[in-house]
Each structure stands twice: as C-alpha cells, then as structure tokens.
Image (cartoon, rainbow, N blue to C red; front, side, top):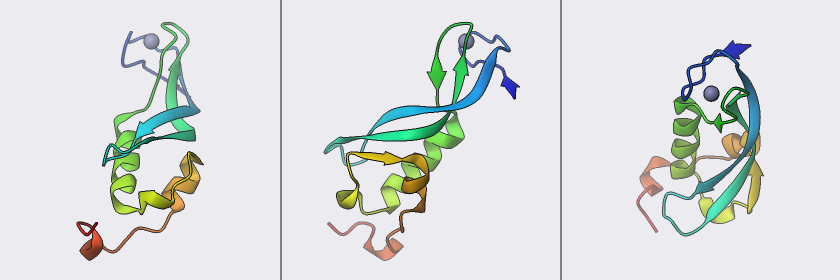
Length: 92
Ligand SMILES: [Zn+2]
C-alpha cells in the first residue's frame, strides 16, 4: 500500500516496520522497540512512525510496569504486556 510521505509529500512511501528507540515516560532510560509499524519513503529516505502508532506506544508505556521491560522488545510484545490497574497508576 502506497501512502503519502508526511515530509516530502511524495506518494512513494510504503507501510513497513522498523526499529525505534523510545525514551520511557519517566525518562529513566530508553528501550529499543523492534518491528514498529512505520512509513518509509524512498523519495526522501525518511522512516517515521505515524501519530496513532506513537500514541499507542506512549499510552502503553504509561500503563504497563516499565521496570520489567527488557532493553529490546518487539512492538507486538509491548502491546501484549498486561496493563496495571488505573488505581496503581500514580503509585511509585
Ligand atoms: Zn518523503
């Protein structure tokens, strides 16, 4: 499926996956997330995550126990991690 690149606006971008480095919401460390859906553009050479994917990852990182995250995790694994109960959200 071809999509329009958000950077150069060429319709030569494709949906693919890549590896993204993500800083945890508490800023303590960064993790590597593999197989993240992304848009890759052959015209300008950029690969970027779409807004909804970014939001999905950010939300998940806020709701899971990031202490048990390994340095490298796949996108699917990350989204399958059990979310903490909301009432525990602000307890540290
Ligand atoms: Zn482009």
